[in-house]
Amino acid sequence: MKADLERASAPEPARMEIGPMTLADIGPVMEIERASFSTTWPADAFYNELHTNKLAHYFVGRIAGRIVAYGGIWVIFEDSHVTTIAVDPVYRGRKLGETMLLHLLDRAIEGGAAWMTLEVRESNLAAQQLYRKYGFTTVTTRKGYYSDNNENALVMWAGNLKGEFFRSRLRALRSRFEQR
Ligand SMILES: CC(C)(COP(=O)(O)OP(=O)(O)OC[C@H]1O[C@@H](n2cnc3c(N)ncnc32)[C@H](O)[C@@H]1OP(=O)(O)O)[C@@H](O)C(=O)NCCC(=O)NCCS
Image (cartoon, rainbow, N blue to C red; front, side, top):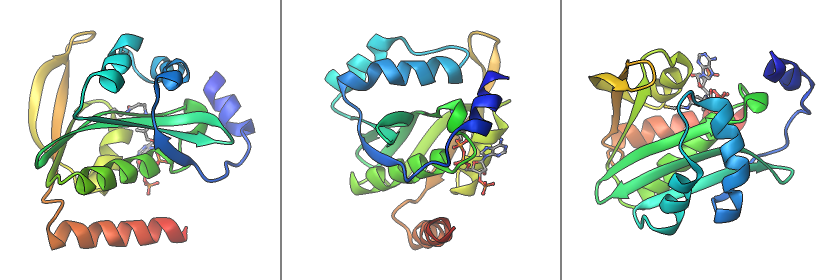
């Protein structure tokens, strides 16, 4: 596969810098979106999220100026929702998805969230593994949620994000992560 060959020859990445997504980032984000999902958001969905949705917080991760990952959340009082997260296929398996998820968790907690939820395809074992690592558990299944292939969505939740149990788990994961 092209991504595998590119991944093998990609330079060992320097630290990924995460910052807010801007309208100018939508082009490169769409390239990763198209390489990552079988049904993609249209560019104007990102535009609306950035321009109109006051509850939305979107971020991009850059290595040497190149956008290699992105993610977004909605924070609504004590609830937060991961709307999307993806890593450029060439850069996968290098802890960039985990770095982005940690960032989304930090921003949600900062914004006052006590709970975080998301939907994930039943077949997407890599993403589920990442979420489980960060304390997400499956609370229900939405049958036929994805219209392209009628696949079920697992609805996962994590929380209480403000409680000592979750915070100490996050601290332990973060310190293991930072020492690697
Ligand atoms: C899911 C995704 C964001 C993970 O990003 P990544 O940078 O490749 O993952 P990381 O290197 O940060 O891995 C972190 C953890 O994720 C899990 N994981 C990542 N890739 C995995 C794989 N191929 N198989 C199993 N678990 C995997 C593991 O728990 C891993 O932790 P570990 O290395 O300690 O076991 C990435 O695969 C992606 O962009 N997928 C396409 C888009 C997508 O499915 N988004 C989620 C929508 S719900």
